[in-house]
Structures are given as structure tokens and as C-alpha cells.
Image (tube, rainbow over all chains, first blue to last red; front, side, top):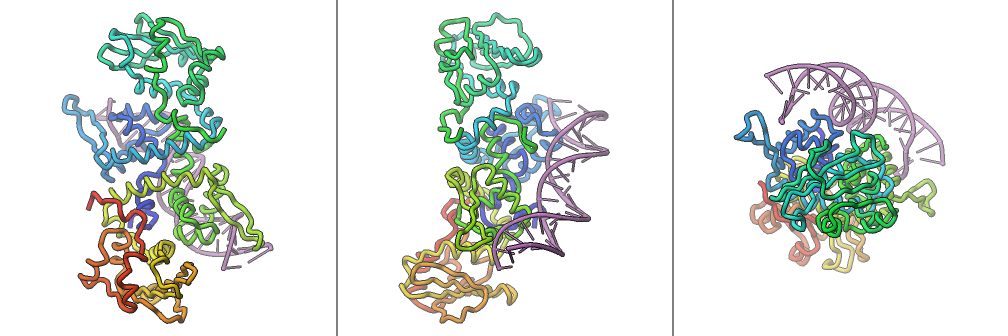
Length: 232
Length: 232
DNA sequence: CCGGATCCGGTTAGATACTG
DNA sequence: CAGTATCTAACCGGATCCGG
């Protein structure tokens, strides 16, 4: 009998033994979202110690959820990918996230503002389809933050790849979003509409008129933003 | 900022902070299944210490998932019931359980045999509808277990209420199920069919012919038994 | 009996630093 | 880049005890 076991044959308990240890669900979200490298995963779970991340990845591998493979082109570098069983956790993540969006208080959520996580999330959800077919640079300015976390650049390449920089890449900027971190997070979460933030003077959009007009097309919100919120 | 927080505004992380602490998912399963009293809950999570159960119930109450109310008829006795937010966790439990049924190895599951939990689960899933409209007593005999855990009686009252006894209640028995704990658990989990267990001589059913014939009607299996299993 | 609270020893997680 | 090592703090399990 395993050490940390609940000793219950019920599939909820058997699954919870694997899935409901500290950080595991958040780590799985990162994996489901497509992160594969150790340090890429670290960026998605910055408060998780590397030692624990390493242990959890081993546990998930032992559970048949994750596969660890050396990257042939880069010696000493490894890739963590979900197995079929791991990809099948998607409905679990969705169910947990939907419940959180619906029932966790907005105020509690907004106590955890983090520009790094927010920009990282925005980056991987940008839709390049409605963008110009040339390189496009969007600068986000959080006027309430200290210098080192204030300015962010999203660079959308013609091939649709999106890069994120926190230091000025030196390219011409096509669109500026000037706001504060809380407002941008509220928009991302679906708590506040882009139009309302603009009307309230909390979001200032300047630059290319086409990009500004299409902002609700290319700036995709959190996958859970559409879920109805039932508590304040 | 809360102590054990992941510090992530993502709804998966916010929900996981509440739901993915040790024992919580299993406790929620008990609540979803309808247990309301402290000691009734203990019976569903026997390996959880009462101190931790008490703490978790407080946490769930603070999270708006559980309501604790004194039972008016019985002073000093309390009832724990799910709020609307708590009942809305049903899809989460189902998603976790389905994943567990599909992907946790059968052998791992069957390392956690427990006649008490099994009978407790069977009790609350008996369907009285296809049963005779008189009191019906079913005795389950686990021939591989020690005396104290070998014999169990399920008593189905005419009104559909089902009682479970581990000491002989003295009633006339209408049907006997003689088997071993692993076989009965395999049947309950949907790993083995009743017919196959009978053919293999691992389950012996004697007594009322009508009850025997209808066994697959009134003996409802685990809610996850229908989920396809994809690993050995 | 019911509904916990208390104490103590072992395990787990966090912080930080360090290595190939 | 991809992790280990080490130390400390928090948490958990098990037993016991207590008031109504």
C-alpha cells in the first residue's frame, strides 16, 4: 500500500491521490497549455520551488501522465509532454477552472495580480489571424508598476509566432495599451469589458486604428472568461 | 495574501487552492453523495483524522462550499450541507472520478480493498424500485475475511430506506451473496460482470429466485462502473 | 454516542544556494 | 538549461482526551 494513499478503491480517491497534491493541478494546467521544458514550466509556476517541480514531474511520469524525453537536437535538454492519459485530463482542468471562475470571489482572485503571468497568458492566447500579415508590435504599459515591470512588448511575427519581451526590443510599435495591472487582469478574466475600461478612462489604446478596432478579435481573453460569474 | 496561496489569478489555481488539499476531494465526494453528519462523514473517510476533518469542514465553510447548522431536534448535533456553490462541484467530482476509472491501473485500485467502504457504497446505491414491496434482507458473506468483517446485512424497508448491519439483525434472510472481497469489489467497480463471477464460481447467489434474477437491477454498481477502462 | 480539541512525531513544502 | 542540496517551517497522521 502506497505511503500517502487514501486507501480507498473509489476512482475519485485514486485519482485525487495523483492529481490533488500541492501544485499538481496548476502544473497540469501548464502542461495542458503546451509548456514542455523545465524552465518554461517554471515560468508558469514561478512560486513552485524547482525541487518540488522536479519531484512532481517524476510523480506524473510514474503515474503515466507525463513523458520525459531528451531533445535530440540539444544534448542535456529534456522535454515533458503529456501522454494520452495526460491529455485526457483536459476535462478535469476545465471543470476545475469553470468552477473557480464561477464561484471564487473576484476580490480574492484580484489579490493575486502578477504582470509576468498575465503577459505570459496573453502571449499564448493572442490570435494572429485577424492581425496584419507583417510583423506587429504591441506595447503594454502598466502605469502603476515600478519601472522593471512596467513595459511589455508583444511581437507577432508574420508566421503567427508571438514573442514576449520585458525589455525594449527596439522595433517600431504599432499599438500601445496604457492601463493599470488590475484593469488589464479584470479584462483578461472577463470581469470588465474592453469598451467599459476605455470609457472609464482605465484603458488607453493608441496607434494603428485597424488594430484598435479589432482588439476584441486578436486579444483573446482567458479560456474561462466566458463562464458566468455567480459571486461578487 | 493568503498563506497557502499559489498567488495566481487563474481560476484553475484559485479553485485548486480550495479543492486540492489533502483529503478534500474525497470529503467532497462524501458530501456530494449526501452525508451530512460529522460521524457519518468520518465513516466515508475513515483514515482521515477527526482533527483534519474538522479543519477541512471549516475551510470549506469559509470558502462558501459547506454550511454548518445545528440540528434543531438534537442539541449539540450539527449538519453539514453543500451550498449551491458546493453542489456545483458535482461536475468536478465526476470529471476526476471518470479520469480515475479510465486511467488508474486496476491493480492499484484493488490494493485498497475495504469491506466497510464497499458495503457503505453499496448501501447508498441499492435501487429499492425492482425489489419486493416487503422488507427484504440480503446477507453478503466474504469468505476470505476474518469473522468480524465477514458478514454484512442489507435491510431494505418497504419504504425504500436501506440499512446496513455488520452484526446479525436477526431477520429472515431473503438472499445470500457468498463471495470474496476482491470479487465483490471488482463487480462494484465494473471490472467484472456478475454473470462472469457466477460462472467462475467466485460468486454464489442463493435464496429468492426473483431477487437473484433481478440482481443487476437492484444492485446498482459504482457510478463510474460504466466508464470504459483504458489501462490494465 | 456525538463533535470535536490537544499534543507529538514524522513528512512535506518553501527558500536559497549551488553544480554539471 | 536543468536540475540538486540543504535547512527550516508548515502540515499531516495517530493517539488521546474532553465536554455535552
